[in-house]
Image (cartoon, one colour):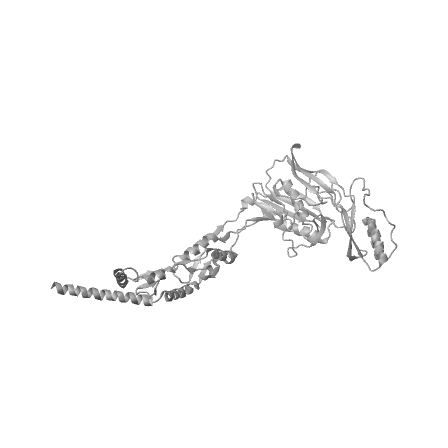
Length: 534
């Protein structure tokens, strides 16, 4: 009996080993994945690793085309696909692992692995990754266009009274939070079907209540300058810049940028070509004259005792305020005039221009200074350099008779002092700024283009006198064909008027206190045919 049992056992072991060995040889030759192995719901039975890879990648390609709707502000939708954010399959090693099941280890281990698959399937899950930077780019470029920035309540002034314009609640996509939300969804429990996601929205409440804005009722400071000598284009620029600033409401702690308020300097923004300063010369540029706007506002800000954070003087002296009382802005050099509302209430800027060419800025707010507190500003000229020569340039592209003259500019160094009085008694004197202005001679560009040698000699002889007024007279006579005026002595070294002034556009500006009522000194009238100052 024992021999019979022993024989049956040997037979069974032989058959078992033969089956296992045969299975191993077949798997090695065909490299096929055993039954009962899946990726998600895809059966890998009988497939090579390459065939399984092709099948799964085909599935992933389909997944990448599914529509994902991102719900932005107020239900506005942006439709994307996982491919748009770089979705990719990140655990491709599972196929190599699947192919090794039942094909590694000793005979018994292989047999056991194969038998286990008959009782329970082996299922692998796909893992995905996405490019978070591409998600952020989509949020910025496509979703943020529906953002509604909070708009603070503002004031307008109508018929001498203030009117409150209500603010608007802001709703914006929280890009960082939304990016994490999309990333977690696509790499987590997504069912691989079309889906819709509500993006994270941040709500910002506007500033400004009726009660807060009702505090704005007092005049903190006002200042006026004249632009009566300006031509049509420059006058239009001054009016345009004033209008762009008019109506600005600035909350406590906020900084106001004059450049940001009046730029860009383009025709679309209402500007014309007019004279402005550049590298010690007067040149035409879009927006020429805008510095008179910033200067007038600067003086109103000083009288309001707001906190000036950026101010630059002009390269050359201007005529509509005293030295050191100007404030230049320029796109090319990045100059700006900035100040902070350092009061405890909002302020309102009113800017007006008049038919007789005056510009006035008035700053309203809540007056917290004592009634006996007064402030004024005094300009102190430290040094003055008067140009004692004239410079004449020739132009072969301009015909004889053409003369373009630019004014002389006196050079100054000057300080601006803030003087505070309490009940008529001076209590402080503080230097606010120091400014330096270039000295530039009176210059002329004279046309010498002619085919007549005699006329050429005559105009060159006039130029040799280095006297611009004589050159102007000779040029006019040559153009009209009349008798030439008598020759004049060279202007170099010629004495100037006893008071040291020069007659062109930018004449001297007295070193005197600014008028207490907030009005600039009278603007000098430029000689006919000369270029007005910035």
